[in-house]
Image (cartoon, rainbow over all chains, first blue to last red; front, side, top):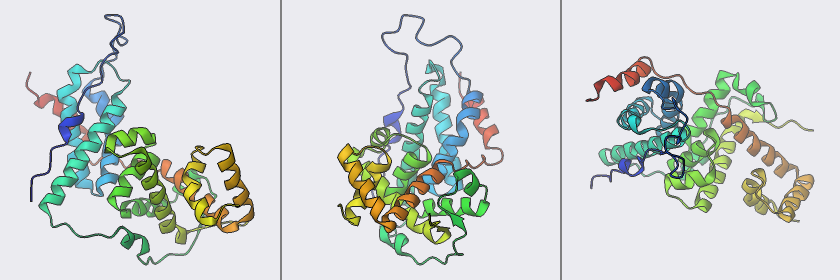
Length: 211
Length: 76
C-alpha cells in the first residue's frame, strides 16, 4: 500500500499582520501569546476536536502533541492572537486526517457500510428525556452526555468530520469546506445526513412532549 | 403543499435561515399540518442545540505540562 500523502505541511501558514497596516502597528503591542497561554487557552479545544474526529483518546493525545510541536516552531512568527483559533483548527484537522490516513495504511481497512451503523439495532433504555428540554438541563445528566458522545462516535467518518466541525465546534460551512477540501454543497449534504443519523440514534432515548 | 420528503430535504436550510421567503413559508405551512414532520423538526433542532453545548473533556493527566514543556525542547 502506498504511503499516505503528508497533508500536514499544506496548512501551516502562520497568520500574519495585515499588509496594509502601518509599520509597527500591525498588531497591538504585547499581543504575541506565550506557549503557556496558547496551551492554556487552546489545548482543550484541540484535544477535544482530535478526540471526536479520531474516536480514540491516545490518538487525540498524539495529535495534540504534534499540533503543539508545530505551535512551538511557529510561535516566534505569530504577530497576534486574532487568527490563532482558525489556524489551530486548520492544523488540528490536517494532523488528525493525516493520523487517520496513516492508521488506515497500517491496518487492514474494514469495509464499512455507512448505513450499517444507522440501521444497527440498539437496545434503548427507554425514553426518559425530552427533546424540548434545554441543553443545560439535558447535559447535566452524565448518561445523556455519554449517549450523545457515543452517537457522534458511531457516525461514519465522512459525516462525523463535518458534523463535529459544524455543530460541536460551531465553524461556518464555508470554513469547513476550505478545511476539508469539500464543496459547500457536499458540506451541507453531509451535515444534514449526519444530523438525521444522530437524531435517529438518539430518538429511542428522547421523547416528544405533546403540545 | 410540499411533501414530507421535500420537507426533510429543506430542513437543513430551514434551520440555518437560508431558505427564501417562499421556501420558508412552504416549510412552515407543512409543519402546521404534519405532526410527524413537526416532531422531526423539533428533534433535529434539539440535536443541534445539544451538541453545540457538549462539555469538553478535560486534558489527560500530564498532557498540559508536556505541551508547555515542548518549548524547552526546541533549539535556540
